Amino acid sequence: MNFKNIQGTSIDPITYTQNMVSKHPMITIHVGTDSQCVAKQTQYATVIAYRLGNCGVHYIFHKIGVPKIKDLWTRLWKETEMSIDIAEKMKNAIGIEVQIDMDYNEDESFKSNRLVNASRGWANSLGYQVNMKPNIQVATRAADHHCR
Image 1 (cartoon, rainbow, N blue to C red):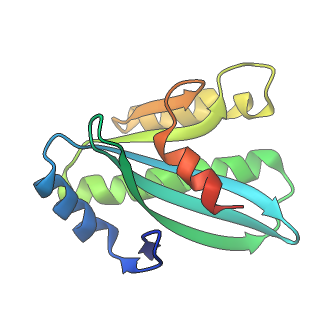
Image 2: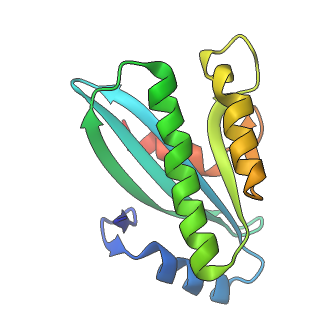
């Protein structure tokens, strides 16, 4: 995956994460993906966010466009797949603990609630802590900004 910083510089996410962990040993890392349908495309943005305690968040992102996905379940499930994919690559390459932020709402009145149990169950079975709305959403907030 080709990640970039907000200045547009290409970054290898594994090497970059290794450097961030070595510079900031108490860092927490969040991975999250969001999507938006724009015109005839569905835009996906995956973010790796580095939370530096109470000193803010720094992140890198990957963005792609695919032909428009009209089915909500399919579009949102792809968000889960993309987040878990990069989290697994980071865990296998670096052996670090990563949290996965999912842009689904635990409130049953929201359509995204239909994916909560399946997505959380899959991520938990792989050993990840999962954050969902209304709780802390570090990575998916940045992803939302980049997929518009």
